[in-house]
Image 1 (cartoon, rainbow, N blue to C red):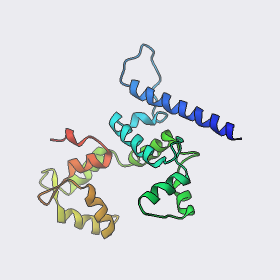
Image 2: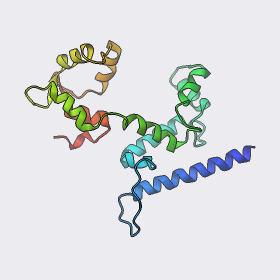
Image 3: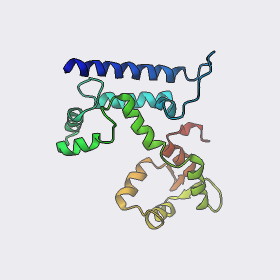
Image 4: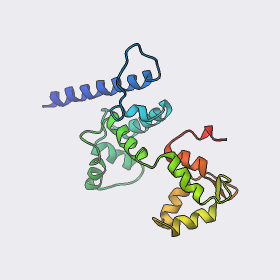
Length: 191
């Protein structure tokens, strides 16, 4: 039984490696014409640097270095942070993954989370609705008031979490940069 699991892990590792190589070669012209894939290659959703960051995070969580994140890995990771979630809580965390959580599945989960948001243009248009002067920023207090009193109203905890990522400059929120952060785009391209 253990050898079956080992064989399965080796197959998944080989598939993962092949997918990573395909992602690296995605920008290289090929003599063969391939059908364009929309959802089958999760690696195409992220830049190489983003994939590397996800790989580092995955490796940090995969405490026993077997190529999979399981309940014990999560337990060890939380213990290193001084936290002790119950086994039920840990199992609940892993329920989102379809089967064993290898790197490809890990990346797929993040792809679903980050690319399941509205398109960048839609987010920008929403900000522009509140930017009457079309200057590219909103006053911090005005934005906070909007989040707490309009639409899906944020509580103070959600505001605090949002403010950790917020590009604040002189009491103003650069919503172009913030949109890039929300979408996982490169903020260095923004002037």
